[in-house]
Image (cartoon, rainbow, N blue to C red):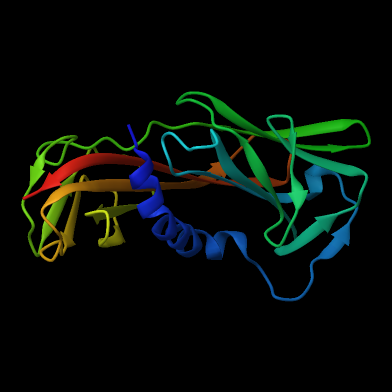
Amino acid sequence: MINKRFTQQFRPGIILILGIAGVSFLLNACKPADTVDKSASELDVKVQVQDILENPSNDSVAVVMQFFVDGKQVKLEENAAITCNGAPLTEDSRGYGGRVPQQPVGGAYTFQHSRDGVNTAAVVTVPARPVFSHPTVEGAAITRTTNLTISYVPNDGKALRGRASDGNNSVSNSQNDDGTHEGLDVSGFNAGPGYLSLIREYEEPLGGTGFHSVQKKYISGKQIEITWQ
């Protein structure tokens, strides 16, 4: 269970992580995007779900849907409506974004493009969250060291960011998703309550959607409480 203090302490770091993780995926050229009126089969699509907190205070996650033609990001004419799980996504600096109710593991986020009575969807299934393993598990007493290793169950993520905090200080970096996250210097942390978090990034194509192509990115997080000694 994530407590309120953890969320408050980690939120600036989470925003930084999202900025680093998503900038190349979400931001395209600096010049304004062209507006086009094209069918779904002519559009390349990128979708992203930012499911960082296991129990967000507003019970929702951030989602983004982007459209491209010939490698350039575009906007759509007003005859196209963009939704995720039925909730409208509005145009912003990234593409079409919004927040939707968080879905459980095994659930889905359905991104839909509707134009002239034709609906085309890309369905993103919610993956399992990262799983910590011994000795870095919920409630463990962890030694403050210059080279902390966080152990976890590996998966097929593109990358995995490990993070450690004592509530006031924090360190993090991104490494391969291989089951061990090494090299965090927590020697200067305060003894007492602390936190570990893992944020896994999935990125892969989705086929059979009706769009010209779809690339998905899913960011899934897990946090635990530990004690620094």
